[in-house]
Amino acid sequence: MTSVHPPPAPGRELSNPPADGISNLRFSNHSDHLLVSSWDKTVRLYDASANSLRGEFMHGGPVLDCCFHDDSSGFSASTDNTVRRIVFSHGKEDILGRHDAPVRCIEYSYAAGQVITGSWDKTLKCWDPRGASGQERTLVGTYPQPERVYSLSLVGNRLVVATAGRHVNVYDLRNMSQPEQRRESSLKYQTRCVRCYPNGTGYALSSIEGRVAMDFFDLSEASQAKKYAFKCHRKSEAGRDIVYPVNAIAFHPIYGTFATGGCDGFVNVWDGNNKKRLYQYSKYPTSIAALSFSRDGRLLAVASSYTFEEGDKPHEQDAIFVRSVNEIEVKPKPKVYPNPPA
Image (cartoon, rainbow, N blue to C red; front, side, top):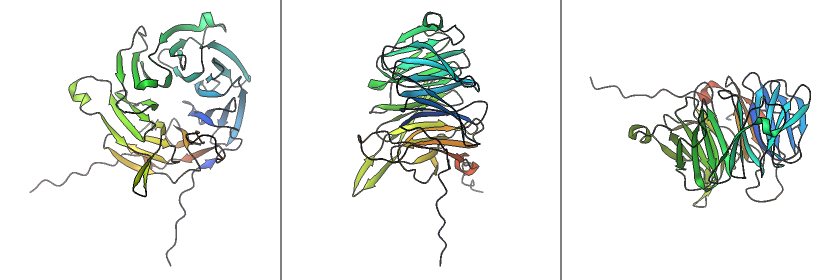
């Protein structure tokens, strides 16, 4: 009789999860603390290693994104049009400023010392969090975008902005007066997520139609020849393709490989340089809404949270799983070259 190995556990489920859809989660750059934003109008701070909820911060509307400043404070983006700074230890928050529509994404630039927000009001705003609370003193600049902002990503002084209408703008944070490059997504369908390569040479962009594009900043012919796109998060059923949105991309901080999460409930790990899938984790209860590797790449946080791609229907409970990452799942495999003829 053959023994059946149970599939590996999806990771440790965090207790006290948000009560509604999870919009994003992020590990700190300094510890295993995890910041989570949700449609239940909260931002929650967890210690992922200890599985403990360290703080919960209520907002005036659903929270669409959050990020750390350092281990003692963070920032959030809400549908009540506000950009907030949250000081964890005091449980206090101030409003850094406002947009004219829900704020979809937020990033903190260590290079510029600024908070960058993207909104459905078709603007990008930069804020100086050191300014006293009061919008006039904290707003550094407002930069019109071609459409509603859907996703932002930073690497060094580079900022990539993905909007509705498949636009992609690339900025240098030291000169925001206009984009360094104005691009169009190389995918035919709406953009879901953009994430810069840790080595700063380009970005990965995912769409609602089960694809990821790998793009490069350098406009030389040789660099542009390296760009490509691949299909993922789809399955064949009764001879037809079922295609799922790719909601999340997260790069491994050590190896530069990356994980994608889709509405099919799967997390895949890819080696972009060798164009190979390294690993597929066993299926999660529902759509993967967000992913984040810890600073040393030892942990992967997975938001299993229905993203309403099929409208309102009964669905699994929103949950956060933290899994220990095995090197075999994320380390690129060396290329095997055939032996040269003797």
